Image (cartoon, rainbow, N blue to C red; front, side, top):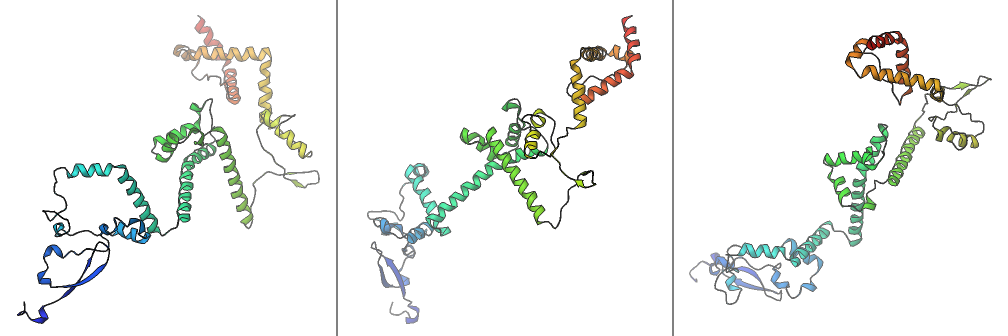
Length: 364
């Protein structure tokens, strides 16, 4: 060793850490160091903290979890472990995978794995407990909003297309069918909500539907009002009327003529009139004519006439041979739309002679 030039005898300082986590400096000759000893122990060797884990700082725990010491493939465990005959710490590989799988399924392993993951996530975000709780609260709000979005969207769809929200039963309700359609289309958020949420927290009951509709109505009014207030000007397209002095008047309240709206005792028009006595109520002229004609059914002559027309029409339409004799353009009376019924009766009147001649031919 003395014959080697002095400049070639490089000396190196190695940090060797004992079990008390104290660093000692020693001088070693690289020529005397084997490959198995080049991997020097690190400050992050978990073996130094087995008995002092309760005294480790939060930052040190995070450092140990994210940057633990890992021995190299040339590390010789024989020099560290007493009574070891091999340079590796595992002396049997025949059931290594089985033991690893069993270890992975242990409750304590799963618990501490989750705790360590949460700890690392919290340290990475550098947030305190109050901030973490606030973040969890915001995530919960966002999750609940995502549950309500398809429900509100279905209500808007019914409102935009003038569809009834409810039917005779919940099974025939358009709103419920829309929710089923969304689930079938792949809305996993809605599917999970409807299947796993409590029955009293589904937000699809009739009361909740009404509350959501009120919220939507209030929001829409606010949007329209804000746009009108912020605009330089806005206009209304209406047909005004002028009084006897030629002054144009604009006082409008539009609704249908059902009893709840037009009732003279407790209808909407009566309640408006109680607040504004000068407000006049005018029922739709066409609707009033329809009601008057509909009331004609109380007369026996009218009922018999309409009944006969219905019987003749059904008799002719039920047979292809009779339709060829009388005519194929005799429509069937509509029971729900009076306008269509009026058209059918008018056509029957126009073809009355042809119908009588056809019935006489059929009777022969």
